[in-house]
Amino acid sequence: MNDLSTNNKDRHFKGQYADEEVVAFFRSHWIILLPHLLIHAFFLAVFVAVFVVFFPFIISFFITPLGEVVMVVAVICITYFIHRFFIRLVTQFLHTVIITNFRIVEIEKFILFKDVQLSLDMKMIQDIEKEQNGFWKNILNFGELIIMMSSSDIRVLKYVPNPDFHFRLINRIKRAYVQKRFQDKIQDRPQHSPILHENLTFPGVRISTPDI
Amino acid sequence: MNTVQAIIIGIHICSLLFLAVYLKLLFNYERKYKMTESRFTLLFGFINISNIAFAYILTIGLFAITTIFLLPYF
Image (cartoon, rainbow over all chains, first blue to last red):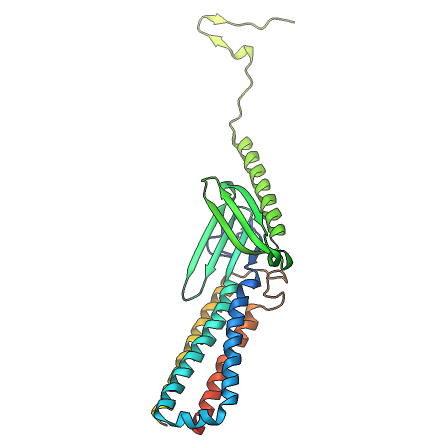
């Protein structure tokens, strides 16, 4: 729990409030990387196979002027694919959804290429729906969280790992948030002094309390 | 050194510079906004961002060294 001396400002993500606590965070499920990994593995296998099978031919071909151009293009392409592959892996790490005691923050940070931050306030969240339809989603335990906002806007968090846990967690935080707001409202309400008969005076009239 | 070798070495220098800048920015960001990781947040339950950065450096480095050292044989 936060005490008054704790300052969480910009501690875990840019724009974090001083009294905001990170309850949990998650990244997209690894299934999102699978097509990417398979494509790169396929190209690597083809490249190695071609190089091994046609090695004598490649050696003699690279000596020709056309071969030199092909070699430069091949080096450029392979370098590009290596960078692309690792940047995609890093992107997986930097795309986080953070659940705090006040809101849900989705951060898409791609270092040099993209910086998007989306914030969903707990007070604006009307309803949450968990969807885990399909064989693979149930076997590998991932799914979607559909968040209905009070402005009739719908936000979908895709490829959420362990959606059941995050669904229950968001519901619990939202309930705690609503209860806290309600208590704060009661405390902030102005205190009225009780109406006593002695205090009721009108010009020229004195209301006396009957003796019991 | 012929033109092809010069071009390929140039490509690798650009590649290594990009790698250095990218990793510097990445680790600056990571250091600034540190999150508490667990096996539920790591990739496949055990791969963290340092492992990926290490593999990135290794792959780019090995590719550059292999290409540059193989060049004289072509």
